[in-house]
Length: 274
Image (cartoon, rainbow, N blue to C red; front, top):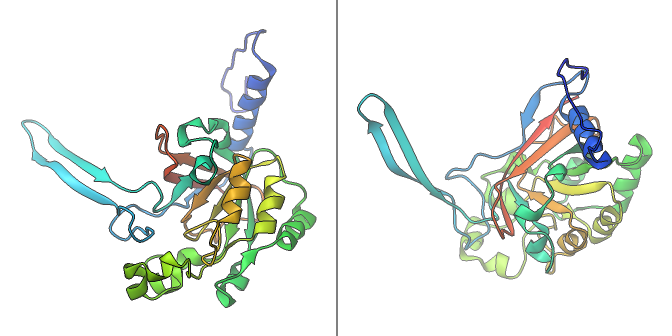
């Protein structure tokens, strides 16, 4: 019997790794004193943020009406892989990295570790996560535990829909792609040195941020993406409001659409508070 009263029968031939994975899943999803779930996903609709030139979200009606004996609604939708709250697969910016459906599913349920750089981000849109931020987190809370998804809280989810504040460029230049072509955007991200430090830690399986990119808006060659994806650490971008997520103790689920061969796709990100 489990602590929750469910009977579980295991074969003597059951692999130790499977037992460990099952036990970890129970601990993560059914802690002894679990708090509420919160949704860190932006809704896909006309307000969804995309890089200029990418296919925007569109929901079109196939049928909506009364049938004989029942009501029926059906729609088609279309979207670019990399828009709204989504997961970057490692192959996005690393040849040979996992495609979306190749990421092991046990990495989608993890310990949540949050590093808060929102005060610095509010004062400087070009600020980045640094090794000092990561060292300070570890000094306060200890080492990361496998599997961990690291969340970088900048506070930029508050600016969702405000192009000037969220992307750091005028709406006119954003629409004309002038700034994007020169990578002259201004929003916080993960610094190259911090990304290398994260990539070297085997406990972290994914990294999320509440901005348009893991890298800062001024980046030209995306060093954070490169460092993380070389280690098959996936990315979560355009994550929603993290203000209620504690530095440690929460459980996170990041559940992407299973797109065969995909370099990314829409992702529902949920956190269970401790």
